Length: 531
Image 1 (tube, rainbow, N blue to C red):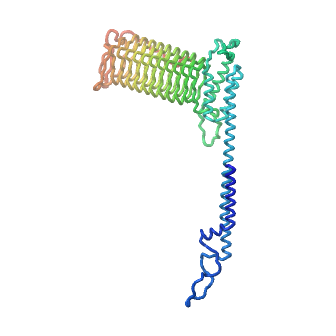
Image 2 (cartoon, one colour; image 1 turned 180 degrees about the vertical axis):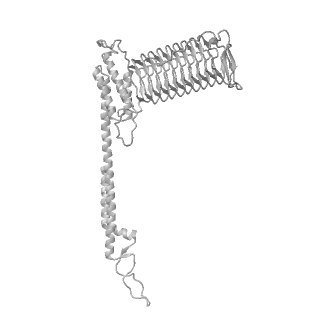
Image 3 (spheres, rainbow, N blue to C red; image 1 turned 90 degrees about the vertical axis):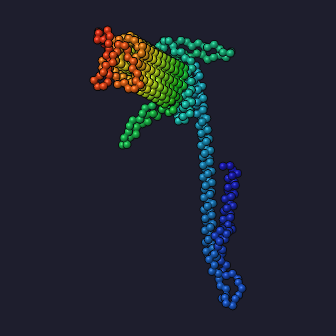
């Protein structure tokens, strides 16, 4: 409140006080309440022979002197009370305004302090000395922990991610002695800073990664009964809603397990050493397109709430997605798995694409659930491919896929269409006790080894036009549903349809190979591969 306003208010209150203590109260009584002071006489009127003489007034709107004084005092008291209340209100407003001004002044000072701390910490990250850079990282860490502003914390994370995105090549021998730093060539006559020791830089980067994961780690609070004391907050250091942009970053032994993160961009990043994302929840989009994992990549129990993109990624080591949950579209198109790829019990709620993927060794999809379309068209499986007890609710596409090793679809369930057209099976393939509720399409498929269809159920179309190598198939216990109108079934020439005992049909192998020779032994169970 400005001083001029204060003077005006004080003068106004003084004027009201003068008015109240002066003629103001009388004016209120006469003009508002409509009463006057009794002068002791009735109004003068013309004398009349029939009227008695004049007597003192008995008018109810006239007050005797004593009552008049009391009324004036009461009005003055009420008006003074109102004026006092107004003065108190003005004082409160004035105090509140001063408090608000003080608060804003404090906030501006605090903001300036935060800005100063932030600027100094960022400046430290540009130092050529590793201890100074470490100090800058810890300063940013403490600054974000001291200030619960989501915007500030995201900014700090962005700075750390930007640092990790800076070019860096790990030394070939991390245990060896550090080579002496050499100055870089001057650019435009301005000397560039001295080169950073790669071994020291490794420690700085590991610290930056640990700071990120420490604030992204999230533990579900334990269940608590009403009589139990409240336990300490397990996620006091968790920063909620953080986004990561580590596109093209060089990451060392990166451990983001048991974390909760929003959008995560790891496209074209290089993971040196093991990368751990076990039980992590990605609440936003997770992008790993074009990424390289030089060793193991562990995603066991990870949850992808939205899209998950791994297109063009290279997994040099063991890739573990055991019991991972993909609730959005998932793309593994043209991915290269050099070692074992484990998707045991994984859940794919939406579209999943493995088109053109290369599985150099084993691929385990046992007990996986595919609710949306599953596309493996053109995929190459050089080792075992195990889909035992997998559930395909929508279309399952394996057209033109190449299976060089043993293949297992035992007890798999295909609710939608199953397309294996032009697929190549070089080793043994097992469809024993599998169920095809939709169309089973094997047009042009090539089988070089034994094919087990014992106990398989065909409920819809069955198309084996141009399929080859099924002269040695095992067909014991095959069940074929009675053909309804519009159902098309084309079996290999050596498969003969026969009537069953329960109204269903069955298949029997005919020709020179029927009943001849022992079948190739079944595959060894494809358990979890080595880590």
